[in-house]
Length: 256
Image 1 (spheres, rainbow, N blue to C red):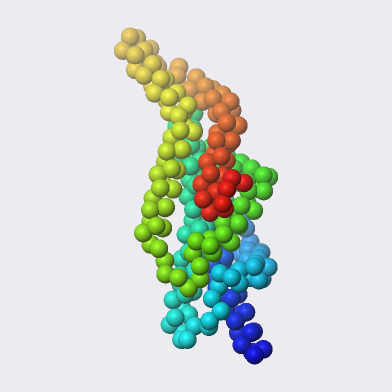
Image 2: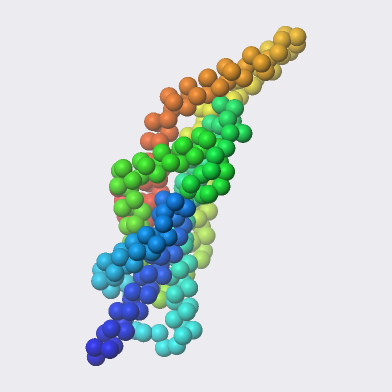
């Protein structure tokens, strides 16, 4: 009896660790390159040990009859974990679109730095917005909400059930569509600025062909773009946090 109970607990830990560990491979901040892999592993193991007793109702008691069935169930758990961890990362792409449009408006599109979140070259404003959003998420304890989405996912995807691939694809498509929608909405001041500024440049170049319009407009564009960025920065972060909260509320069960 004792050996059977220990075996069941080990299987429960394996199922929970597969989903939670896979989710933390893709989640923003936790999956960043500056986050130590050893610390991440310790955190995942500690979190798994802490939540396994509360997940006993969602994890089957029966031990898989063969290795193939065990591998299939673990693969499903890893897939669900990767999907849940990928959603917040996709939502963070909203700021990448905003940062790119802001960089185009301020003529900083060629100024790139290494983004510690993705370990790739990004514009200065994109990296600044991403780091500011991560700090805001941590300051408002919304990272608790991100972790809570993993635990609440057991109500939607209980262990042992087949994946609902159609619903997953539909939800992911709607999430990507919402990211593009809100990305254009948040960056709309910069898009409008580019349209008005470049239209004015075209009109002035036709009226005064002998005047070097680029020499005059470029400094003005930098100052105007940075001023607009500083004015709209609080609103952009607030709008993004509301969007981030509303999207995660689907898993968490309500606004944070």
